[in-house]
Image 1 (spheres, one colour):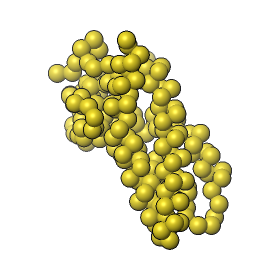
Image 2: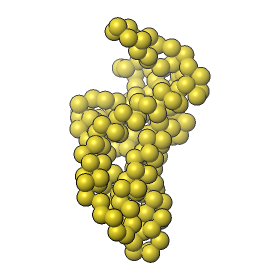
Image 3: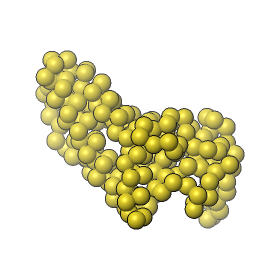
Length: 175
């Protein structure tokens, strides 16, 4: 059964990882908690994390789109691959299918004000590092497609590390 808000670890949203119930909106201001299949839960988690990463990572995505040159390794392609990887890995962690390292708690990070501010900086830094860093790796190695491989690795590692970081920030703000 899902933990009550008072029982869960600070900064962590554990209910989606522990149950197959999700909150759905049916219009006209009506919310309902519904039991979903595994596929339904995964799709719900993907849309949730997609919105989070896309909205808060928009400054970096716009910067990459505006500054990418046509020569060399493709910064835009690397950033796009990182964006999709961040969504996929975040959804897997949110739904409890993957346990993030550095924490014993399943689930994603809550949307408190401090953690939204952390996300804003973190997601943009990861997208910029994956886009430009991945392109740099591809250029240095002389293998342009390796930019995508490096960007996917950076994005996956960052999303696996984020729950432990978010939990640490939430604990530090609580004391």
